[in-house]
Amino acid sequence: MEAKEIIKKLKKYKIQFIIFSILGGALGLGICFLPPKYISSGSFYVKRSISSERSFFTYEGYYGQQTALSYTNSVMALAESIDLKKVVIEKLGMEVDEESLRRISKMIKVRKTGPQVISITVKANSINMAEDMWNKLSETLLDTTYEINKGGDSNLMVVKVSGKPVIKQSYRSMLLFGFCGLLISSTLYLLFVCIKEYLKD
Image (cartoon, rainbow, N blue to C red; front, side):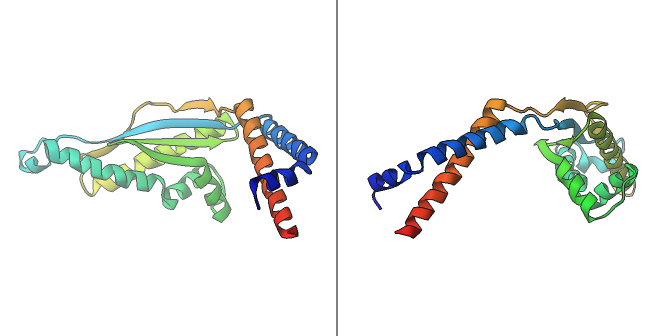
């Protein structure tokens, strides 16, 4: 089917296309008026203190830093683990089941923002929930890493960069949401029309 023929066929659906696109744009704008989400975020620094015992010289300097770098990946994996999330759910007074674990997994995001820096963000429906969950997760992570390191390398530690998390409302651009809604709806409608006309032929 040539391009001219396709355009000619699409012209038959011009009015429907415009209506469908406007509805999609309106739907995109409507999302901006839904209750906002709140994001609580903070960073953690993974380090290794210099040992006072000279017999552990191999850990000092470069090797000590390499140990901390390697440990950062372990801390990140721990922060994302089901075990840690289970403890956080219990501290929040919620029932631990598949649904609550799935929900909290969607709310928590863990990223490595530097060689020894881990950022944790929590997205929730209210400021209090976002802050409380972040604090519970932070407390659980620090306590767990401390207990683990007591039986291993006690000089390895995880510290909060700031005492309190930064809390902000998630940003929603009406222009962007409206444009995306219009673009998606118009693309889907064009695809539908093309398939419909192709099957006719």
